Amino acid sequence: MDLDFDRDTMAETGAPLRAADVRRDAAVPERPAEPRRDTGGGRGHDRLRAVGAGAGALSLTWLVFGWIAPFDGLIGFVTVAYVLFLALYAVLVALDEDGPAVRDRIAAAAVHSIAFLLLSTLAFIVLFTMWSGREALSHLNFYVEDMAEAGPLDPLTKGGIVHAVVGTLVQITLALSVTLPLGLATAVFLAETRGAFTRFVRTVVEAMTALPSIVAGLFVYAALILGLGVPTSGFAASMAISVMMLPIVIRASDVVLRVVPGSLREASLALGASTWRTVWHVVLPTARSGLATALILGSARGLGETSPVLITAGATTHLNADPFSGPQVSLPLATFNLIRSPQLTMVARGFGAAAVLMVVVLVLFAFGRYLGRARKGR
Image 1: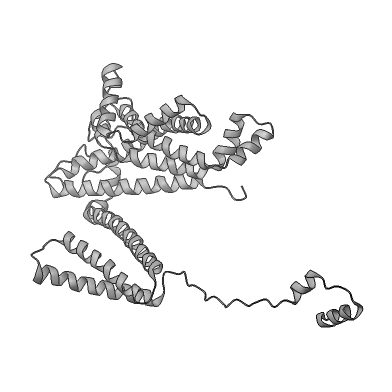
Image 2: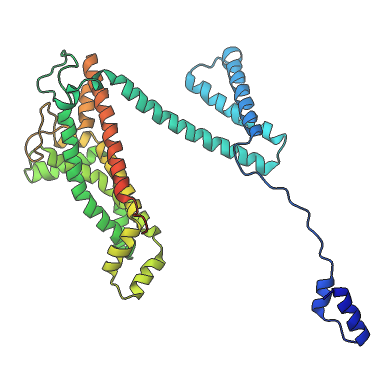
């Protein structure tokens, strides 16, 4: 029914107008269409601003270093150029945008530049290590032989690092067998309980995070080798490595477990499950991916340790797969010993050992992510 006809009919019959009819009849002012904001950071004029600011910063920096001030050095040149780039970029953005947009663009430029710096540093380290050890990595004997029959003057066709690879794998396996149950149990205790003792344990774990590796090696040397008579071996080295890995695993696992929603715990307890079954069947499976990441972080810390292995396991050029008898070397320690040599062939072997260590870390990282990946549909 038409609204005007309805109003005329009610006026003729004397029926009072309802408030709803008046509100419907009132004119609603139309809002002006608000322009859409482009939140993407890759617009064409932004790229032109960045290119222009970069060119201007390089030119001004070259002018300052070459003609105005007696400055020198690559680090100073890059620092001054970066500061000038941010200043010029802010000026160019301020010509067309308001204050919040300028701050947003400057923050985005700073974040992207820091990310680029980190990625460039990582790429430089990897490529430099691979390139410096390319001569040793190209020989098959480098992967299947030890250094028992090779000397400093022998060519790269003789000797290898299989003894260091085996020692690293044995030591990290023993360290994980100790760190995994202790770290997860402690993290569950910190996440699921409250009290003064919990705060004390968390304080001790936080203090152990900054523990120097040499102190951990000396502790194991005094407690196991001198105190209990354990021989210098890969087992003692793995215990020292586990001391370094344990606080990392506990802290990271504690954070991951506390992120698990409390509603999941409450639902499990409401269904009649005990606290132990709730933790085992609800909390740990939910945080499995994060726990795998915590284990990877701890393993990466343990794989790179040198001084604890040197103190507790010694150094050897022979292959020793028995962690309970005799000295046992690891890849970081072998790299340290080889790099110190004045012979170029030994230095190439040292860089090759470092490259193999990076590959081992990458493989363990991929394997840990695969184990921690949530199953489809769960």
